[in-house]
Length: 342
Ligand SMILES: Cc1cc2nc3c(=O)[nH]c(=O)nc-3n(C[C@H](O)[C@H](O)[C@H](O)COP(=O)(O)O)c2cc1C
Image 1 (cartoon, rainbow, N blue to C red):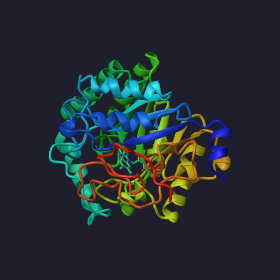
Image 2: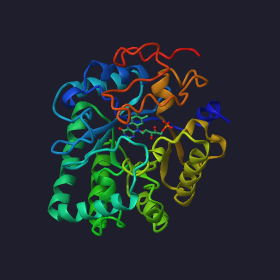
Image 3: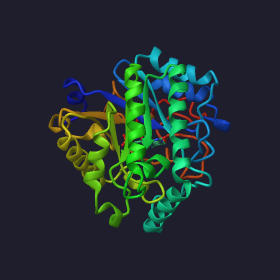
Image 4: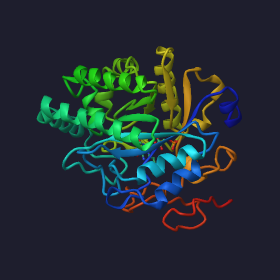
């Protein structure tokens, strides 16, 4: 069962967080605005602009956009809203000295987890409070620019994903209380919220214990949606962007498990979600789409023509500066965004 079902039973469709890299020195340029303008539509419920660094925060790479008072952010939000989608923004930070790996699978998952625990310990309560305050301030700036859905990026091994998990941060409850407070305040301003988490880190030993409990604790937070991703960037990127069928099947099964255990909460399914048997999904699961919409801006009207797994979009892993797709008719720095019919 495919797309027709996805829409006919009224599941909301989200354009998942993407950092397209069209942001020299952290400032989005016209390619960035056009990228989102071209993909937003009345069929797309919400477009979540990806991995935007909170003021005072740290980028995960040189092409990461930074949230400032620059009017370009209002142009991004306005372009999305004009086309009929809710403008969303994913707020994130890494930390000083963070470096993403270029390879898809890291050599030492256990060391990544150990380093994460040491990092959190070193940041301390004061540093954690400052980081959370930056998220509060960023949310207000984003709302001022016109964003109406705020996502906290607590996935993929970036700072928040370490802070919210008590298997990494012994003080995680205090962080969760502050995030709950942020979600409540945004709700009272009629701003929609979500939090993105990773179902697994990719470190098999770490993931073997406490995973369901962690998911259920996050599901209890007062965010409108829990966006279920997977993988830590420096452990196993194949979990973040599943291409193999078995990885996709596992991801959908794990996501379903969380949604079924928490029927009162809404979830966003990702990882080739469009190909899931949507009529069999719990009704509290909505559909997140990324690579298909990157490949074809008109994917929601033309769902037979999406991503073909050519992997060119993984620009950071390939040592490139910005997003391209093998299916676009030409590489003009992302301006064309038109799929080649193959
Ligand atoms: C080029 C590219 C950039 C991405 N950037 C982000 C990002 O900034 N934040 C994020 O949470 N996920 C990011 N992702 C992951 C996607 O949001 C999505 O979870 C993943 O691609 C799986 O969904 P899909 O199978 O529909 O592509 C990115 C993916 C790609 C391919």
